[in-house]
Image 1: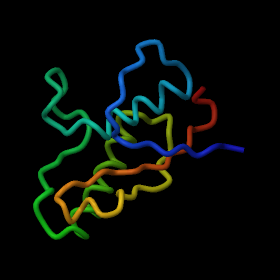
Image 2 (image 1 turned 60 degrees about the horizontal axis):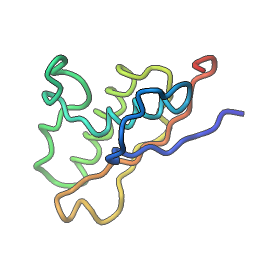
Image 3 (image 1 turned 135 degrees about the vertical axis):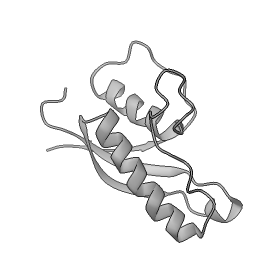
Image 4 (image 1 turned 30 degrees about the horizontal axis):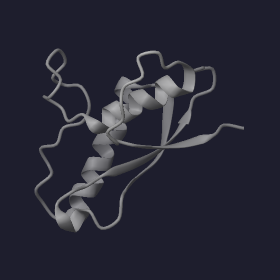
Length: 108
């Protein structure tokens, strides 16, 4: 049975020795925490934040789609099961994605 993992873009220290599932989940966390154009050697890395000003329900839908595309591109060893946002933050102008992923068979 495959396990599902919940990942957020929390500010956690990088574990340069991470392996297996810990490495994969750390990579997903980095994708969530990194807006496009902010990575000097790869300006396309992660997700594009240019849609953040708009109606909250539309922004959440578009942002969720962009997060799924970014994770598929940069960490293909996981399958995204869902993208949600922490409750209450949208009204304050802050969206914090919460992503459930499943590590693909044979990835570890």
